Image (cartoon, rainbow, N blue to C red; front, side):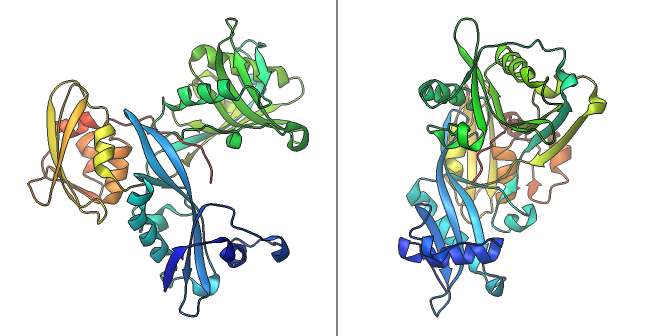
Length: 384
């Protein structure tokens, strides 16, 4: 088996693999080049492409800075080659190449959480889906102040989005219109920015409208503070004369919007896996973490092949010194799943909760570990 980066000469074979895996039609004559810069393929000894995947290069906010992120999508294998190790071979290539590409972590949206745990990925947070009758927002005054985004306000929108994103762990940095709508006359998808009386942009929303089902569909909403939240929700209320229901597809699990709703019998709420994470550069993740001001220390062992080692962490004044060795006496022993869950996602439930997790062994109940990794406000929505 051969695994390698794909080139434009592989475009037709890649499209064929994806088509057979995801069951969609395509026109071979219109396939001229790859759609993405970084794509991998696994080939058998006869040179036939068996499987492929694509990787997107991102930066994600975490702690005191940002992490390089490999966003993995389009993992596809031909049915006749499945369970032959092709997908694992591609992931092994990706893991080996990650340091060269500057990727500290990886994120993907799994069809099966259990399947991708085999490659070290773990779900660490949920997002919320809300569907509510517009009457549930009657206590919020309608307001103006919204501006339809047409691309000319990009500097203000990117600045606003990134200010909001910094409030969440692992939110994606954005500096393009990829996730905002500017083609509304054709696709009927809209982005609005909301500003207060001082002219300060405080919120944005990506939305579309389903007249047949009488729904305003909010694909994404962001606000910098309470004023921005009330302002953008007040703007969305201007549609309640034409539509009965408002739908929020992507909200943080602890969104302040849900507690505002009245008449909860007219609300549908669901929690959905936000995505799965794998760590490549554990030392950098530890260095960027924001620690308590008081002194603390702990030692843990990583059994993961990529991050294998014994990590000693000594912290004070919100920063830490990290040392890595091949041996030592750890307080905790963790595999890649536990590292994503607790080092990246944070701990809730204390040692009682950890005692039920087979991916971590608590050798010594060192409270300094719990203080260093409280449960984070993790949220990311960029699809790929």
